[in-house]
Image (cartoon, rainbow, N blue to C red; front, side, top):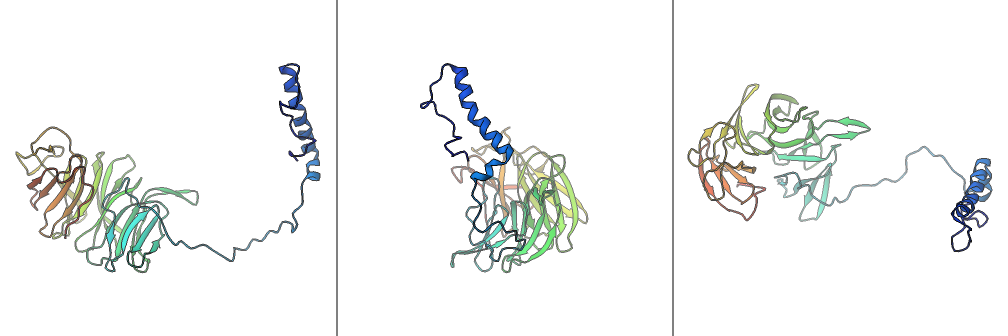
Length: 331
């Protein structure tokens, strides 16, 4: 009814005003008429009744939608999160979907068991079609849901195991042990400290946990020879972990060229010229070689370190890249 010429607002071009008060009065009169007609219910005479009338049908629609393709890839705040299964398909996260992409057929399959966005991914070392994914906290059905870890098959998309309430804000890193029996995860606790956990994922039980500190951890990798040892790299330190029964222990690697051995936490320092220094270095990614040597990529100038099983820095490669090293892979 607002378009009815009898009740349309006058424009400044069509109406002459004595002063500003007269202008406000003339502009307000049509609105008063409209308001009174609406209160009286007379607006109904200006509306048109639907031809078929309103029908309330509580049944679900006969047709539904199916997810065919997901564009994108999460890389802004995640590293080393693309893997390849035994069939050559690439598995990577996009939002809360685990995408299984077949590069030959140019098709996608989607694991959609998560409620929150996927922030970490890991691949089983022996059964390479088994994938683990961890998420961030989210709202699901109007209720807060803590991050969870799902272990699922990339072939039939069936879930194998679920570890609920795994961390506080989100799962930062994931990794399977070399025998595939254990799963390690890194995330936050209630006080915003990084915490490392080890799981017997088949039994859906936690083996051990240990709070590390406020410094961020960017990557986690298990030893290729020792199923109870893994490493984490992050801001200012490289940690070598040992899992014994239900307890954790760790030692920091001292990357100073003068020592190059296991040392106290917070002593990591390495400049792009190969000399020691006082700057706090950030280690972004890591991988174990077939000889069980740990290779670590640094932020900034593209430097790479190689550390043996005893925690000794045995090789430095300065400026292997022109910028930061975000991902590493070893055959």
